[in-house]
Length: 287
Ligand code: MBD
Ligand code: FE
Image (cartoon, helix red, strand yellow):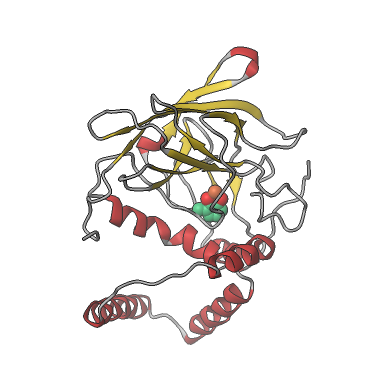
């Protein structure tokens, strides 16, 4: 295992490169774009007048924005500081399991491991072994067979595979896709993750220091859960009593998303969490 710390440009440039391969479009009308643009600048102007933002501050902002882009840190900064508002605003109307932000380090198409398996990990992977298991159901409480449960998380040093600064972490380390069995169950064998510092040696770190903040996120698992005809939920799960559960730099903790693993046999922690999926057709933005 390494004791190095992920660098913002190393992980950020990989996140930027991956995100740029996505096709992204939105069917925003000109009227809607005009309304949003007007409100964004209107509210920004209120802040400028209220705080009498100086020319020096304006020039610092301009330099910082240039550096943020050049360092590949837009995905990092946006997902830490803005994504939670987008996620929360869009998910308030749903009844199933609460969502949370995706963050910059998701990779689609992780290997399918069936309903009960260990995540790919190194022989010397550091951490406390943990079994994370549960059931996927619909709103009526019926188990869903063949639901897809994708999971990804950081290693004990805070690295995500494929965003590892060229350290050579295996491609799919601590990433996998599970399919629920006939009773809707899945059972994932992994390592309980540790509290996590977002990369802070670049402009995102400078931003955090500028307001006297900290770069910590609580230990977390990332998940995407879906099934045919069901709404995909992207979420995260946290750990009861863990550091920074109450002051996540990314503002992405919800009380419904906290796990409380218990020591089981052979020093393995065990925790159950069930997912409830909304039907696909529900929601404001779906025809
Ligand atoms: C992460 O692992 C993460 O989950 C978020 C939201 C931002 C940076 C790193
Ligand atoms: Fe994360």
